[in-house]
Length: 99
Image 1 (spheres, rainbow, N blue to C red):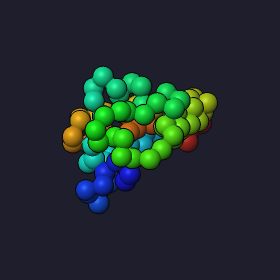
Image 2: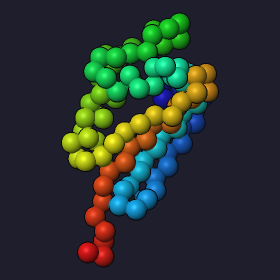
Image 3: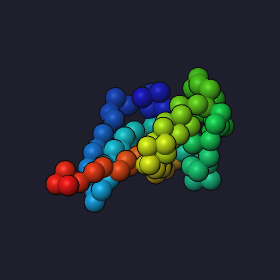
Image 4: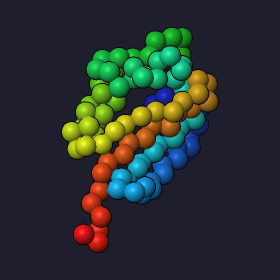
């Protein structure tokens, strides 16, 4: 919500694909430039620019989240269009319930 100050809509999707559960959170905020998307999961990294400097933070939230996901055998990624919003997703392995 922090990066979507002019909208009150966030969409959360969950699904199971093969042996993974996937959770995605979509916002309709400022988005991330294409050349910065891979860096948002780095420790202390904050996207810089005219809009982004108005949002407080240390650049740790996505880093910590991605580290937790990785340690559980999962992965985390983002799809984003600058000015239109971002969709952050993570996938975690799940055991087959029939085993």
